[in-house]
Length: 107
Length: 120
Image (cartoon, rainbow over all chains, first blue to last red; front, side, top):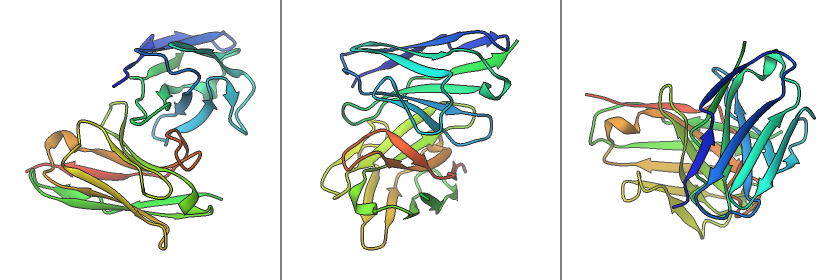
């Protein structure tokens, strides 16, 4: 099965900072990559699919890029409400493996 | 509005069985793949099993293959997960999630989850 590896596992940044999270696939998955946000004590929420398409209702400060094996999620200006764990997920075929998560905190 | 309501979780002994259900509403159930995703306490998300809209394609994570069975009843808008030979490492919140299409394996809506605890 294809493995998904995120980095870093956690980060701390200031409000207004640009934040980038990386997700790498062990094989080419084209653009079949989704990003989820899970706030503390809440259910996961879809942010981005097809590597770069913003889900309806998601703030425009979130963006995604990449294809093949290397992907990034960027928050252009970190806000207090962005404190959460972020997961990537590949979905070119089942199983839809998730990355291990990146915890984002405010400095 | 999409609604997914899981039920059936609880405390079970190692080796026991549980059946989870997920009642869906607000969309044409048979047109969408459905997935079970679990999250152990303090851990990340783990894709457990998925089933296509028609039920004709079924997939499992290696960790549950041979022990768990996913099914759906499109006449009742309900998804199921039969869990047998439960182990302590199956302890998790189990989420029912809707796929973005009939054979799409990412999830655009999630239920609130049901907690399964496996312990003696």
